[in-house]
Length: 357
Image (cartoon, rainbow, N blue to C red; front, side, top):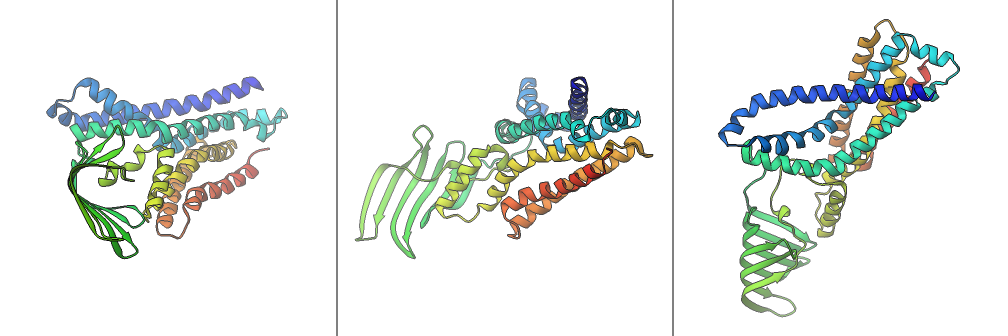
C-alpha cells in the first residue's frame, strides 16, 4: 500500500505543480508583452523586472488559483485511474475508499499549509516589493501624499492633517483635539509633525498647545515629542492594503482600531477569518474531487473536469457572496469565512456516500 500511497501523492503534487507552472509561464509571457513599453520607457533594469516584479508575482498567483488547480489536478489523474479501471482494482483488493483517500488528504494538508504560509507571511512581503516596483515603473498604487485627513486615534481624540508627505513621513498643518463627551478639553496645533521611525514618536515643530479643562492655559514652543496611537499608514491609503499585512498585523490593526473607537474594523475581521478558513478549502475540494472522479463514467475526464471547474467557481463565487453579506451586516465575519467550507463539506460528504465501494 505504501507504493500506492507514494504513487498517488506524486501524481497529485506533480500534476498540480506542472499545471500551475504552465499557466504562470503563459501569464508572465502575456504580461511582459503588455508592460515591456513601460519597463523600457522608465528604464527598469532586467534584475528589477525579474526579482522585484515577476518573482514576487509567483506566490500571489499560486495562492490566487490554488483551489482551481487543486481540483483540476485531483480530477485529472483520478479520472485517468478510473478510466483504466485502476480504482476498481484497488478497491477490489480489499482497500476501503477511506484508505484510498489517505494520500490525497496528506497531499492536501501539505498544500493547505503552503497556502496558509503564502497568504499570511510570504505574500505580504512580496506584495510590498511588487507594489513599489509598480509605483515606479507601471502604475501608481500608493499616493505620494494625502490631504485634508481626519483620523480618530483614540476614543474622543482626533487628528487633523492638512497634507501628508508619505516619503518624508511629514504631516503639515497638524492638529490634535481631545474631547470629553462633546466638550473640547485639549488642543495642539503645529506647522508640521515628523514621524521618527526609530523611536516611534511624532516630532512637532512650531506648536501651540492649549488646555481648556480644568482651566484654560496655553503654551508655545519650537519642538515637542509626542507618543500617539498613530502610524503613518493611518494617514494615507494603499490599494491592496490587506495583501501587505500578515495575519498578526491584521489582528493588531483590528485591536488598534477598536482601541481608537473606530467603526471600520469589519473588512479587516472578514479578511482575518478568510486567511484562516481558505486553506481548509483545499482539503475539502480534494475530497470532493477524488470522490467525484473515482467512478468510471461515459463522459470520462472531460465530464469530471467540467463539473470540477463548475464546483470550484461556485465555491469562489460563494465566498464573494458571503463577504458581501458580511459587509452589509447580514453575516458575522466568522460565518462569512466558514460558511462556504461548511456547505461544501456537506457536498463532499454526499460525493463520498456516492463514491465506489
